[in-house]
Structure formats: structure tokens, C-alpha cells
Amino acid sequence: MRTLCSSTLIGEFFVIGFAGLVAMKDPDLESGTVWTVCGVAMALSVLLCGMVTRPGGVQLGWALQAALIASGFVVPIMFFMGAMFAALWWASVHFGQKIDEAKARFAAMAEGGGDGSGATAS
Image (cartoon, rainbow, N blue to C red):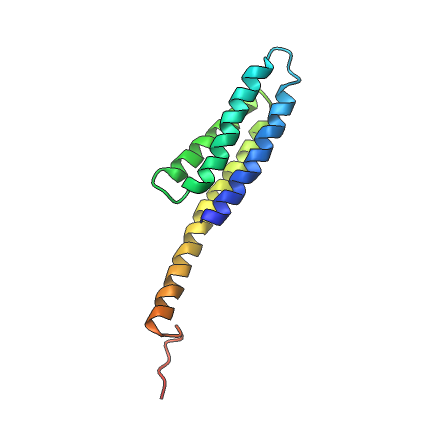
């Protein structure tokens, strides 16, 4: 799960940075505010890479996804990008857990000496 989720979060890091560049074009927004918000979100996305497997890590990831979608009120394309990354986050968590379970089963079979085929040796 860690690899899939981290890949999604690193992708978000770059998207948040590019969204910050787009937000800079808005004359109503101050550059300090834009980069403070983007910097915090970018730092959170990188820090979450190491926290995904810890308690609350996935929930913090969901909070980041909600914030990414909400950033569409400032940069409208982020409604779409946020939804896409939320879907990627769901897939990363869902399929990452399945992969982790399969790895654990294979490790248990290897530890037990079985080949997993169910056949007995004669």
C-alpha cells in the first residue's frame, strides 16, 4: 500500500505546485498567501508518504484529497484534478491493501514450506 499511496502523493505534490503557479495569476490573491497554503499542502503530501501505514495516515490522505477538491474554488480546474486524485487515492488504498494481504499470504506459505498448490508430495 505504501508504494501506491506514496506515488499518488508525490503526483499531488507537483499538481499542488502547478496550481500555485496558476493561482498567482489571480490579482485578488497575494503571493505570500498562495505559497503558504501551497507550501503546507505540498509538505503534507511529502510527509504523508512516510505516514501512510501508520494509524491515521490514510485519513489524513483523505483530508488532503478533500482540500485538493476544495481548492477548485480558487483554481477551477482543481475540481477535476482533485476528483481524479481522490479516485487515485481510493484505488491506491484499496488495491494496496489487497497487495499487502497477498504478500502476507505468500510469506506465510513460504515460511510454512508449502507451495500453495494444495498437492501432497509422494
